[in-house]
Amino acid sequence: MKRYGNIYERMISPESLFAAWNAFKVGKTEREDVANFEWKLEENIFALHRDLKSKAYRHAAYFAFFIADPKQRHIHKATVRDRVVHHAVFQVLNPIFEPTFIADSYSCRVGKGSHKGVDALSYMVRKMSRTYTRPCFVLKCDVRRFFDSIDHSVLLEILLERIADTDVMHLLETIVESFPAGQLSIFERRKGVPIGNLTSQLFVNIYMNVFDQFMKHECKIEHYARYTDDFVVVSGDRDALVGLLPKIKSFLGKRLHLELHPKKVFICQPHQGIDFLGYVLRRNSSVLRTKTKNRMIKKLAMRVSDYNAELISANTLRQTLNSYLGVLSHANGYGLAEKITNNTILGLESERFAELFKKI
Image 1 (cartoon, rainbow, N blue to C red):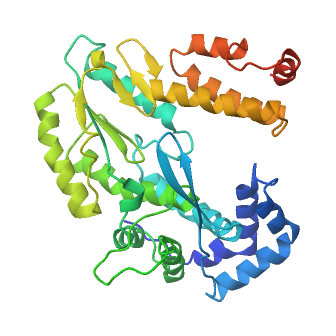
Image 2: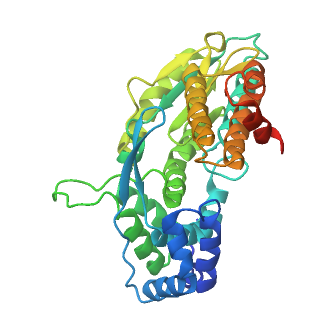
């Protein structure tokens, strides 16, 4: 396995930091903290470069808040300065690790995503069932408290297998150990990565790639797909899936210090509907999960309310609407899409409705 050294200077160079800033700021320039950083951009970037070069850089504390998506999630937001560093790290590390990932890993990767993951599962089911003419079973699992359970020591060990640059490893340790804040007893292992960090998205794929390789090469599973901690295995033999479960639990526990969610492990068949990544796949169709559809309508209603109150622009609402129409285009959602675009759900005044759609 190739290890990479002498990459720290490239990672922290002013050119890299300016490129990281340009990648980070997209869609965020109206936010106060981003605008403040940009106001003295060159001064801030060069100061950050000096701190990184002299090893004086320290990751700041996170700003914590809750969102409902649909369940309550605890989000931790890093400072703009730290997020620029995250992007600089990502720019160098992602090309190193991306080629090691399996094709059927769909989370936070260019050309992948949840829609591609659902399409892949649909293809696997059709292939295994010979277009629904033979028995087919799907094992569906996800990990309990996944982001909170990622073990820092294990993650750093996995990173060290590919990274030979001690300065890069020191910076990665600084980022990893920045969360959670506070002291732990000597008997506790440091765990958890913050939801939302760009580095967390990469770390998750690197961490779970160990499991992907186990599934593909040690267990010899042909039909397997994963999105973050949500994964499926397709087989024509139910007993084989039942027999696979103890191996999965053992590997996750011993190697990655993770455990499956006891209420989110099940085996089903296509005619029962396969719930995966917000969609329910059936024999000849895929539909939005009811909770997903209701959440989408609720969020749209909130956006419309903000638009009517002139808190957001028509362009912002259009972007949200187009995003949801894109979601519906991957399922049998024509009826709901038609209701939305005909204004039967949005409830906008005729003039506001015309303004919204005049550029679509």
